[in-house]
Image 1: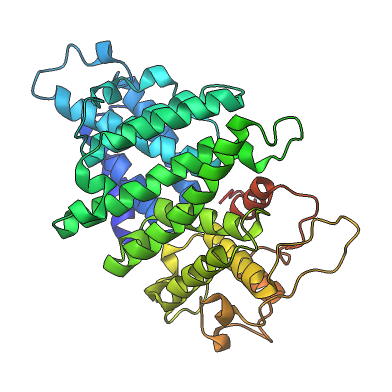
Image 2: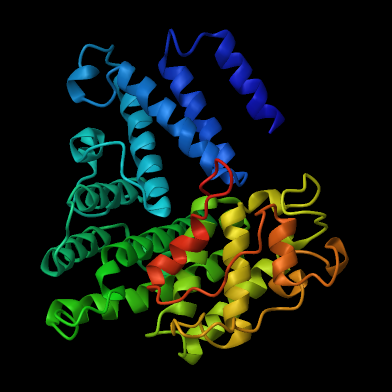
Length: 392
């Protein structure tokens, strides 16, 4: 983080707030992504707000705002604004927070043609356009959800061949792009299909509901599989906050959703994801959850909580009780080591899950016994627990 501090100091000396420039906005965007991937999503979210406002000050949010710019700088301006919109989209979706930008602000993404052979960047931008349209609607009906799902599928099917089929990958770069687009694609599917998690009697069993139900189950499993395949090739997904968040969210939903929690293949995937973190560098030589030695810095507090909850669920063989009359919590792993994040000796006492929660700085042991709670509410209670001024 020393480089980040130096970069912010240089920006301050340049009076970037009073005299914003395209270069300053680029620097802020890079700093924000660096902070995010160092396990500080709350700070990245706050900085993104400043970055976006400064970009709007320069007029990047509207095509007419850069129409008077020199021809040689317009492509750079479009690229910077596109990066801001994409960053804003996925960070907002991961946090399940309202977008700062409206669909009309995504004018730079209009260049993402649907005419076939979409590159990786254009494919991501087209997905972002679809998700912006989704989140702009206050209420999305089941028919509308299936329409957006079809729109997302159409965008996916016109991407370059290597993005859709791993058999078409002929280089490491193509393999990485393939797995990355798979994670983002299935994450978007899961978000669109969220009504499937709400078993409303008036819609359950209907044709639109059944389509969403089938797609969300397969997308959650595909997300976990793609993450594991990605890890077999590179450490990139462990260094990307958004990819870690996507993978842990999907795997945790598999463990708590009644449609998948008892599925043998799903439980196998859950254990494989836990093992992947245990065997990764994230688990080595850690003396605390935010230690500067070792690699725990790559995981945010919310991801640590998600790993503990996922391990609890796998070890218990069931989700936290939905019976509001029950007061007995499910079995918990005896040590932090069982969650695959540190050596047993790194923590005080017997290293129960409650002690780990205290050691992580949450103040009180995290309440794993969530009663009468939907899978999405349970996920949100883990990923977005407020501690102090932080919402990560």
